[in-house]
Image 1: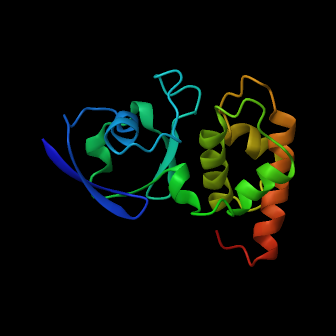
Image 2: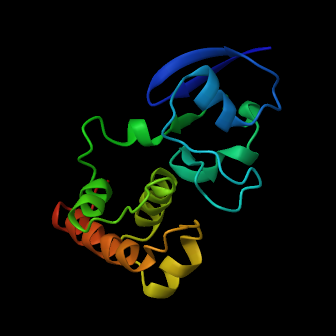
Length: 157
């Protein structure tokens, strides 16, 4: 069944079953491989992307749920890697192996859109992505740096 998706501002027509996980359409049909597959049960967060500016774990979302909505992947977050969260990640050398980082960044962007200056408790509650390298202390610091940068720019993401 052909469906129209808008991913990173570009309209695509894909011919897949409506129940196909969005993750596989993004990776296999559209060849946007920044969104990663790990657990397949929406637990780890490596597959996090945004649908209408809200973070979702794309391994558990059927492609049909994204029709008529704006999908943003890590590739669409910033064309040149200068989103404040990406810059904070680089400044603090957050990634170790890096596999989880695209999903982690997308989750953090979602958090900062809803909570521009999150508390530690809000970070803990919202950022439930798994990082096998345990860079959580750098992640928390990078969230603080990104929040300060966004605030200094007038709060717009």
